Length: 275
Picture: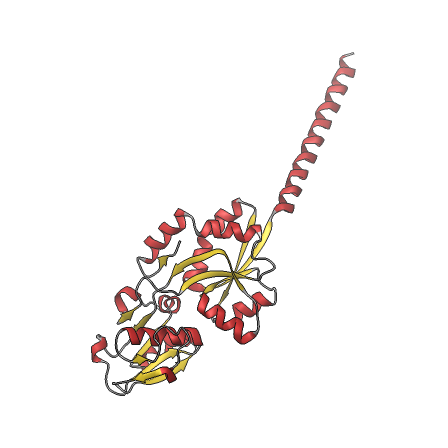
């Protein structure tokens, strides 16, 4: 009698254990199935840093954020258009509009896609005040239309040059109608500008590349954009996935109070939240 009872008890325990293991495996499989991979392209500073900051938050929500770093402004958009990425985070809308027009792409800013502003700055290794910029000085500008215009608009605002239309976000050096210092403009890839800075009298550099090169926009820039700049950095995707739940969760994380405090404390005014 006791032996039979012991056998029955043994099989109950064994059956219960098997059931528990099966239940655990089912839960694990369900969890694995609900994990969403989100591939986002970004330039290193500050975009990839901000994505790294929100990565744990997204992981807790079942989103595996994979950050792909790029060192230029063209490849992240090409990779997104080719569906190698789900989204990217490195550009402002004037640049996106220009890229779409030139490459016949239809990339879009995701809903509530604004993240931050990176005040654009002018730097020099040869002078310490903009007033000391000499006649005939060589000035390096980004060679893409939107950021080249942004540089010229900053020089116009400082009354170093005068543009025909200071509201034209695609102005070029051909739109300069007054150049009292006879400045010579050299257009280069934006990523190269910090490297050529020692050879130039002045270089106008995007803040992400300035920070990456160890420049502090608030301390080192001889000229810097005001905080009402229209060049807000945005998260971009394709029209077929702009409303994807994982991208919505990404924007929630980037717009959180924790992210805002991180931006304010970590970048100390060199980057300004735009949400």
